[in-house]
Length: 89
Image 1 (spheres, rainbow, N blue to C red):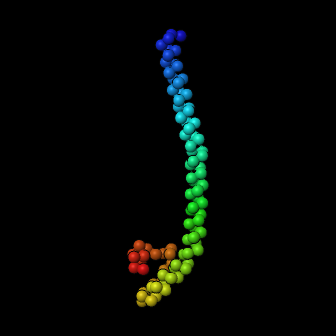
Image 2 (cartoon, rainbow, N blue to C red):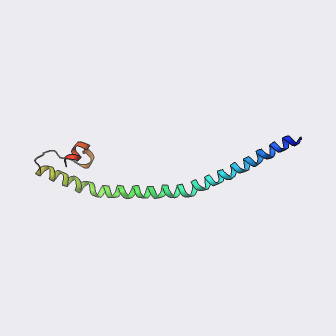
Image 3 (cartoon, rainbow, N blue to C red):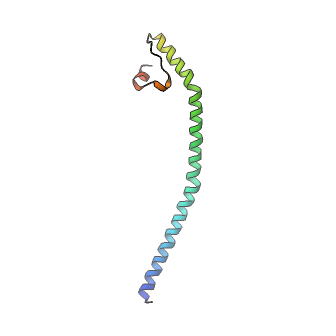
């Protein structure tokens, strides 16, 4: 092989090694940090859903009582409130 071809092959090999090292770093980051953060976010979402399930009925009851005393006869739950209604309450 000529020296020029050998030099080009050496450069290509070095580039491939550098890319593999970078890919290893990216994979390590994704496997460790991203997985941990996704797990934490999942736990947070579960917590928020549990709190919402515990609060939605008492809050809907309170909204209905306030609306009753303000002479509005519409009944609302948290599921059917819209932006206009939220501003009125």
